[in-house]
Length: 109
Image 1 (cartoon, rainbow, N blue to C red):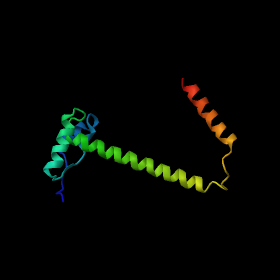
Image 2 (image 1 turned 90 degrees about the vertical axis):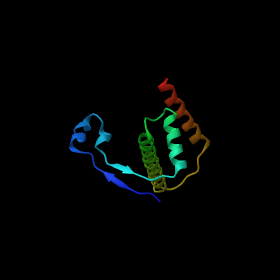
Image 3 (image 1 turned 30 degrees about the vertical axis):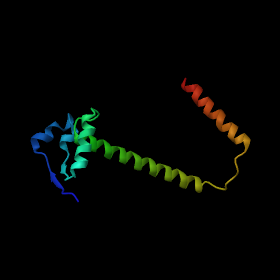
Image 4 (image 1 turned 90 degrees about the horizontal axis):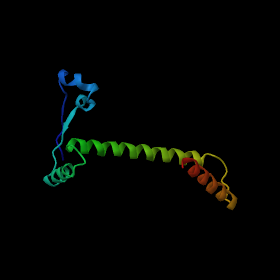
């Protein structure tokens, strides 16, 4: 269970939106057990994050990316299912795929 409170920054803070867009966002306070708070503080102490807010922000961004990627895979799978009659892969098909990969790798180097 957690408590939620939303605060909107004052007009003076929103003037800085073009410099630091996060200042324009709402603040959410969440009550956490001590063990979770200690974990968050440890993550910040590792030096990878400036504060707990940055850590939570990164988790949300990663979750959004993961969900977007999952949706894209599902779209591609549905597209494949609707693409027509299924045919077995031949040795020639696999060799064509390998050659395409080799060509792509060679172009990058």
